[in-house]
Amino acid sequence: MRQQSSQFEIVCVILELEVQHPAAKLIANASKMQDDELGDATNLVTVFAGSVLLACKDLLLMGFSFI
Image (cartoon, rainbow, N blue to C red; front, side, top):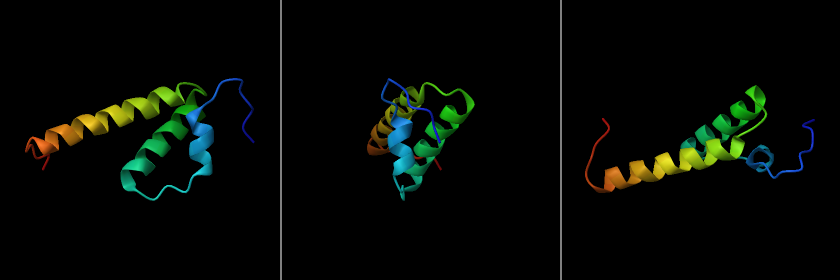
């Protein structure tokens, strides 16, 4: 079982969720891997991934294709 931290970590929430969406699974896995490897910065990983997805959404709305 994971040790309790005095700070809120998004990985605690993610581990309790049953994520279905492929992009959300990717973010959840990245956060869990960050926690497994370093035990810190899981919030950073999640916020950064969300920012990248928002930027991609803007590009798609402008007509860019990634294929």
